[in-house]
Image (cartoon, rainbow, N blue to C red; front, side, top):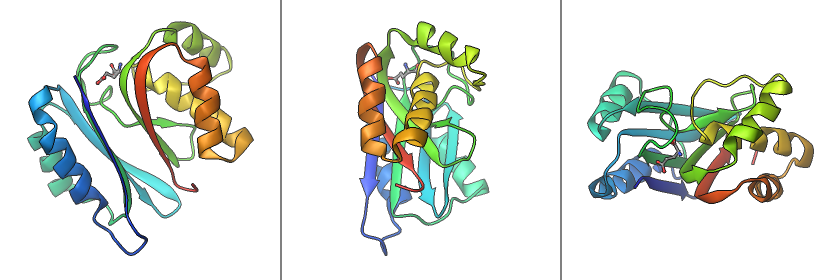
Length: 172
Ligand code: GLU
């Protein structure tokens, strides 16, 4: 069972990382194999993720501090598609402009067919997860809709399975 946390604070509130990490710590009891966070940082989204315990992610954050932010998402993963590696840990990015990140709880059952379609369109993947398919679909849908909620609705209509998705986009 993974954990999934999102936080949107007022503009001047830059506590997103602390709030999200505290949320993930509270969800640790559910069990997980990797952890990661994404924070909106001006015109891009910064991410940090690590296989293993939250302590590993904390270590990474101490070595490479993230920018202050008022909007963030965090994830503890229980791998279903792809092994418990840094690369497969969430968040996953969609598109190539560094503006979109997605975390996901559950399984996208039709990910294989969707991934084949995306590969045929020339989209490249950096993980073995079903999640990255949703991230790439969302990037394409956002490009057209320019509205994150509308784009997410479109994507979810194409996904089969039981899941929760959280996304942040630097422009939304
Ligand atoms: N199916 C996704 C993965 O393997 C999410 C698993 C989860 O719920 O943590 O990355």
